[in-house]
Image 1: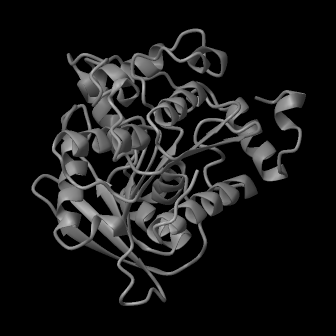
Image 2: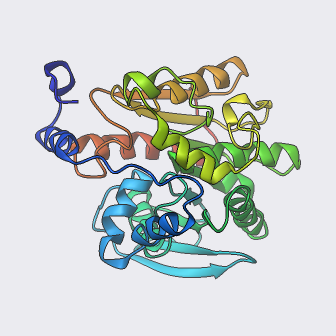
Length: 321
């Protein structure tokens, strides 16, 4: 990720982030059956002292410095953090359901709460951040069930035309899987979706899993097997790329980078949406790895600006490809 072609045209902040990634030692994922090791991973991804950094890395948001009031809604099995940015008009009913990433095991607890602040400040609307249950104690379909519960709860007080959904990586998987569940259960669709480097093929068959990742995707497979358990990885609610895209699928904007190991997932999902007649945009950033630059670079702010423009058009009823 530090070659001349990758660095050309990148901001100094982006180049600095890539240099950090290149120097960081590899940290292999535990084996799927090592439950205590996975519990330690989950705990490390939820500690308050690292909450801000984890929140930015698992949502694709940026720190705008906007003050945000954060409350909580208790659901049957989890909690949703509700963020309201300072200065939001009392009659502004727009809401963004934000589903954090983190390979299905990171970004919970304090990080989800911190994510609520950053996402609400960046998008200027009320944000519901789902602190969904995670493996090893709560494998699939717990996280997806929690996201569905949050959406159903939103529908009790909001017109679906006022709701948008966003997710990064594993959060992108859950966002797309949630839309498939909404289709299956004939629930009203949101007005728009943001899929930021979505993990939509848990069979790991995408070309860039290897070309932009490793010759041995075993670490990724450990995360997948931990989350999926014994379920068929071709199940569309695990791998939304293999699902049926209905005519009511909302306008969708997708993001990735040329160095992202999930570029293939993102590109293939974009092609699938277009083939189904969905209004969809794809934006690929030069040199960007998975998750962009964790909110540290101007490129991250550009991504947020483009996503926000897309969502604002959708909330006005005018999202176009």
